Length: 392
Image 1 (tube, rainbow, N blue to C red):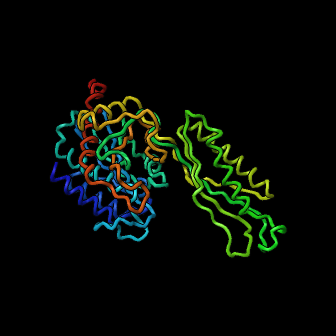
Image 2 (cartoon, rainbow, N blue to C red):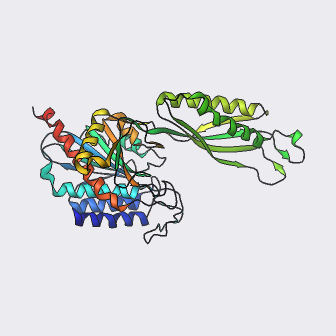
Image 3 (cartoon, one colour):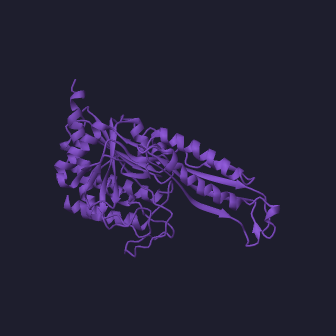
């Protein structure tokens, strides 16, 4: 596998140089398709607009395992200074999807070379677009990616900055938070800044709104739940002496259970409405993530399988079973887990790694081979454990 790994790293660098945003991954999908065909696969393209799949079939009835990687990059300016830095201004693989894609290509190549290891069944490789706010998983599911053949279980991973390099984190239950995005428009009455008494100042109303929403989590969510409301954008005004007619705010709501998410949205809407009403202003709310990402809920049996396989493959000292949520980041792998059993786990990108969605971040090539090994062994182990179901 060593020679294959070097090629996969080169592919990762090629992907990193040429990032494409959600649903624009045309060249990325073409590269993935070309590589899969070179390995000997029959490839299906255009699933969920720019998604790609391939199937490794043992030729014998048995379980079907899906393995998934994400293709898209982010609208971020790269600041790494690497010799394989992004060539596309304002676009960057700042979440490691280039590494995830290269890993799954390596998995597909290794398993194709060792197809005899499959006792039965099949492995479906899913290269998915638009994880970053585009619900690409949902789009692929709607177009039948979990059918023909029907998938019995699904697995995938994300690199984790702040976790020791090559260490694996896994848990049953909520692994990552559910997420929604919002846009709030606060409408007042504009006018001259020298005469605020003649206006309804939406900036002052928005300031109160921002302050008040920050108490929702601390005063409304129990210690057994986790939630976040972050307002990340505020746009208002055109001149220093003009009070604007309206203000636009954007941000995100996240929670670790559907119940908590529903409650946070209810409280958020109430606080927004009443905060601005105090100043005589009005507010409208639009949710912009469609559909919103549910919490990533790992299944018990499949999570324990990953845990056990990781210990056997990498050593117990490099595998960590979590009792709590690993991340408040959202992940559309959650849509797959609503349809079939599976597990989404983390592989450490290093303690000193810059955070995800940061212009200085880079996926560590050192974890690619370990991630490949774990995905290979997990898929084969699942098929072996469940083969008896098809023996009759």
